[in-house]
Image 1 (cartoon, rainbow, N blue to C red):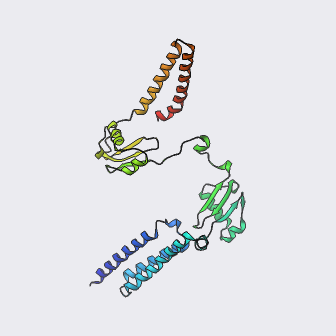
Image 2 (image 1 turned 60 degrees about the horizontal axis):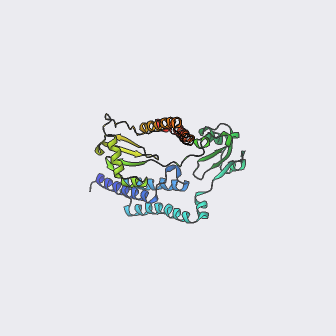
Image 3 (image 1 turned 90 degrees about the vertical axis):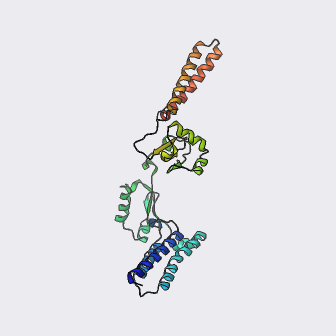
Length: 286
């Protein structure tokens, strides 16, 4: 067998083996790997590269070495899932750098962190004053996590509006022109509803590249042909117009009703609808 063909065969075999090993080890991102797992990855890659190029090396022995190096972190991760003491020993614990606004100098020295390195990491998180920090910890993977003092935290929507409904992630209901039944069922909808929504927009299913439904049951559509546009969806505007019409009708009835009791009832209904219209107007006009 020519030398280059043997190298190609060995390389393809090792690439397939490494792919299977990475699928077996899981989906940890590189930044989430422990130091030990990082070293194992480098070593396995070095063995695989040398094995694919050096014809004098025994392929069986090389594959055995790769399997040993690869299976060891798999075994340790399985033990870590079941034993916290072993997990702490292998992966380490988070180290507190700031507690109650006070810097823990001995912990900085323990992790071989200079104050300059600590301040640099804070600046990368747009924090320029240590006095703004309530709590900070160095995670086992080397990331720095920081909790700002309450008065220094940016305001969120929940701070301004505490009584808000739970947010539900949008569901993709059409992809590449194919209806996805599982996401539809998760939000309590079906194909009949989807067909009706497409018909309102005068869009054919085959023309839809992507369609998503948000928490309020609103569907957004992206078409294959970017020059085409889905018909504008006027249901919100019609709802707002109907609401305003009801307010106008109740206003008229509150004046023309024969009895004071009926006029009071119509006036109360009109007031309730006006309050509802005030709350819904930003959503219905959006």
